[in-house]
Image (cartoon, rainbow, N blue to C red; front, side):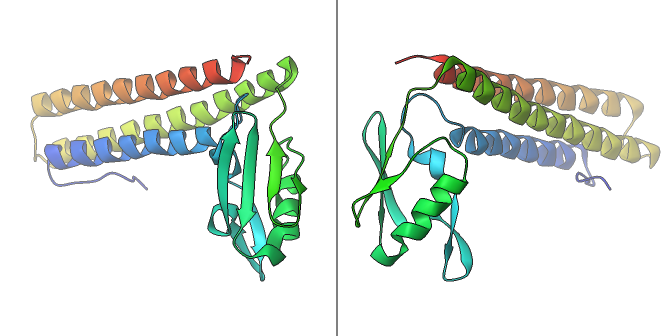
Amino acid sequence: MSSIHGDTVAEIENIAQEKMAKTIEDLHREMASIRTGRASVHVLDSVKADYYGTPTPISQMATISTPEPSLITVQPWDATQIAVIEKAIMAAGLGLNPGNDGKLIRLPVPPLTEERRKEFVKQLHHVTEMHRVGVRKLRRDANEALKKLEKDKVISEDQSRDAHDVVQKLTDETIKSLDEASGAKEKDIMEIG
């Protein structure tokens, strides 16, 4: 089932543009959780702790900050949850070893080894490729919707060809944006110090 449909060329193009923009936003969100050599509060975005039986993002249970370039601190609002949060961070496989003083969890961010950097870059490439595939699927869906309008004689063959060109241009621009964002993140990951 196509995720893009509309009654006019403009409607189809607008829907495709909105969905492609959301794909770029989603890539940025996913990239934020991939570690670089510097401390970032976004590294913990995907970590959920069991809060009274409910998996809850740590950011909804604590104040997360980076007081130093190589340190993340997590201060739970409910001090009784410190062990649960600490356990969730260790289980997340981020390569961070939490330590706490009863009130605050400290996460020293160790410098990444060359091997670990390459693993993160590989993960980044996989995430970026999944988003490229999503954009190409949106292009296909938009083109199918345009073909349907042409088949139903709502638009002419020339209008359909022009609209296909617009969708292709939009696809190319979106993939270029994905690649640029990915390239900048890769540079961050590979940067030492």
